[in-house]
Length: 380
Image (cartoon, rainbow, N blue to C red; front, side, top):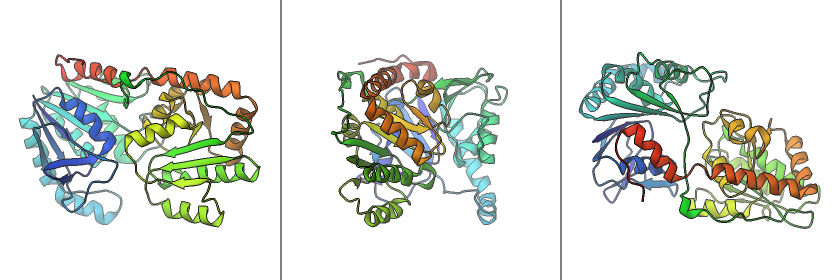
């Protein structure tokens, strides 16, 4: 089977192997276990070296059909894209014609064009991974809404399963609630209780892009306020982005170098160890699909304090295994102080978070692929 992947992630190359954003590659490597060939249609940057967060594709038969990057963020970019469009459509159409299974990565610019071109192939097996917030009540860019409308229209998307995060009412038959897995059943360890009391250090973590939308500075301000109240706090940041400079200035101005640490992009094992040792994930993101860091933190009993976006309320059992907040600093501080006063409540939610997240293992993910790719899957 030739699996065609149409997406917008920029790919890189090192020592004759293609690399790209780690969580995406880790997932596609699982898909690759059950196909003969992977054809990737996506942007490629030959001058960019892989970051620590990037991973290589493991499949021995991976080919890349290179397309130019483009965006629709300004009038000038829209005009440039207009002239690139015929070239993009022809390339996608040719690749889809040769594929046995078409897989779209949405939402994104390439996913938008791919969702239109796939209409011309009603008889081919198809799937789409919508990695953003599917909740129709939430505001989204116009291009995202177009992708939602096309993908959820079972007349336009014949023979396609659309994988979305969360279980949403009144959706068409081709919409399939889905999840993302990071850990294997073989990695599961007994519940590790963390001491939480006035005398112990309160461990906090933020993981993800240091971007405006994920509001990492709120996590830093929470830590600072707790420290000013006489509480021993350590906050670890894992990730990179344009907000790093602001965080560095904030740490320096507040003389917080012994309490707040910026680790940059790290590998999965380092992040896993951090979750195992930390009490709370402080993740005040403005938009998510299935936030992997929330599910990963929960897998190790690290209690998430996060915003009520997308399917996050479903993940947290509407507050049974974590805290849903608006993002106000005083609100988060009050929650943390209440846990310190009631450590048994922290233990209860920590255990519930862990039990829920451990349903979604790599083994279960592989089983779900069986119905999507329509092949027999051997589980080791």
